[in-house]
Image (cartoon, rainbow, N blue to C red; front, side, top):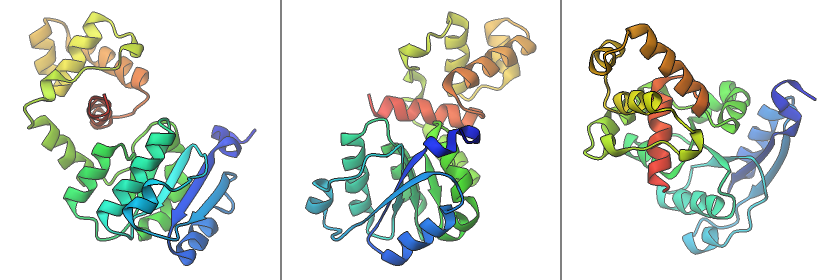
Length: 223
């Protein structure tokens, strides 16, 4: 068994361009992942909607095509494999495009240049439910969520079995309260707040508050 279960990680590469598929294969040839690939013969929405996509844990999608076509392909994958993790590679993605991808459930976003150095490291993180997105993009996306009217209504997945205190802390995090503000509001010590935050990150399988907020948003959007 390889470290982090790499030999069990099934990765599917999707692109209309054989050169891109070859480059992805080259980048991952020593990774130990189980790699399959599929060249997309058509980028028309009806064809992508009905495309037979190989089964995998993580999909690396070349977003060279129009945003709408990429969105249809991602929707197809999730419709047939709801537990799939998605990582999109593309250049010239506008920030609004990145936000739309994140809302659709994408966990990783890389440029082609970033993929050369980061793809093999990003895949295990994405496979485990983590986020691999440029920090400025993720930060501004989280800000856009926090500024939305519905943010305070976000609820964790019931399967996480949060305690009442953890639910209160999570609500505070989604309201963008700092530890000190949470402590004052809940009338507990700042150290206790940090303890609950650490537990929340562990239960949701993420490392940072921004990842937790994004995950909760994605779960709500997919409800």
